[in-house]
Length: 194
Image 1 (cartoon, helix red, strand yellow):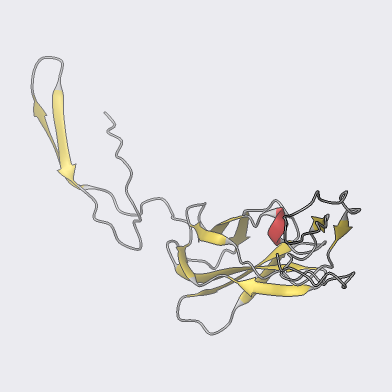
Image 2 (image 1 turned 180 degrees about the horizontal axis):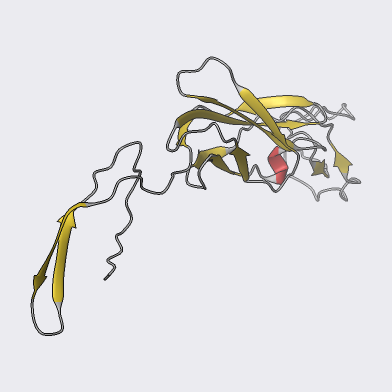
């Protein structure tokens, strides 16, 4: 803290956070040392301001067919800067010029799901998540690329063959399905006997 002239009886405290309660104490000092602090002042809350910290860890993906799932790390209360805090989610298909905007009016929210039958499986989207409160809209995160939900595989494995190993066992083999936009990530196979 800055040392104030002994004839001064008030000071302006700067660099405080918006919408946070503070209490203050004053201590006197001279050439010998520093005295005891005063009793704390009454709690005083600073005025609200537009939030300036954007959500972090914007990611997502997964979900069902025709869904775009967007997730983020919620902004802590001490950085919300006022009442009426919520999130703004903006997104567009990669290569598009038009952004879609959604408002999530929950302080605790960390996820938004956009559903639209026109979304093709595994489509890339540019996504930004921002913040707002009663004072106005704040900062948006940097752009993240998130893929829409997958569909079930549309291609069957090829080259299925079976080899008798013993009286009670058969070894079945097949050609794996390669990843592409239409098949998505193959997480496993199911072998059925007829």
